[in-house]
Image (cartoon, rainbow, N blue to C red; front, top):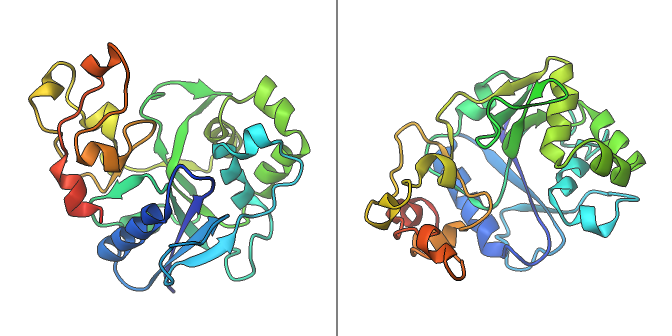
Amino acid sequence: MEKLVFCMKWGTRYGPEYVNRLWKGVRRHASGDVRLVCFTDDVTGIDKAVDCRPLPPFPGVPEHLSVKPWKKLSLWQAHLAEDLDGRDALFLDVDLVLTGNLDAFWDYEPGKYCVWENPTKEGKKIQGQPIGNTSVFRFRVGAHPEIYERFVADPVGLHEREFRIEQEFISAVIGAKGEQRFWPKGWCCSFKEDLLPAWPMRWWQDVPLPESCRVAVFHGKPDPDEAMVGHWPAKGLKKIYKHVRPVRWIAENWG
């Protein structure tokens, strides 16, 4: 059966080129048949080979939450789509760069919720569970509808009283069931936390790409297109430490 990849694109921060580059990277780094399903509010400019679908229903969620990563929770509903339910899907944020073979992401711990251990929260826990980062995760579609149902029942209350971000909520719920697994170390790398040289060395040292890295994740700023040309949006004194040299390996893997 084909390998299944999900992504989401809404709003205007990321254009269709991000989806198209992700699709090129998936085809380059995954063997066999692969399908990218993009849930989006605007299909304009997206490669016709990408399976574009409307954003899943997210009833009762106020706009200040529905425009944030909480929207990913809409993928956890009981019946997302007849042809997708019950299958393992690898979710990838659009603002990352694929740099190595992806096949192991489907082979590793099949049927479990597998996620990248959050690099900024290693060693920390939420309701007794380690915290994943949902930039790169794999889940069985429809397997945990309680995540979606619990959130849409009281989105504001859950956010204000229990969980700051959606990935903490997922880790707490699935971790408590003993079904959360983390990808092996080195498969996913944070551009800022794992790869960017420490200040001030980033002024004269290039950003390395470890051989083990399969996915380079760009959470926050800079985005891949900015880092590729050595631009980190910042103002005032922040420009002193928010600095990056042009990253050659981004252009080689992303485009």
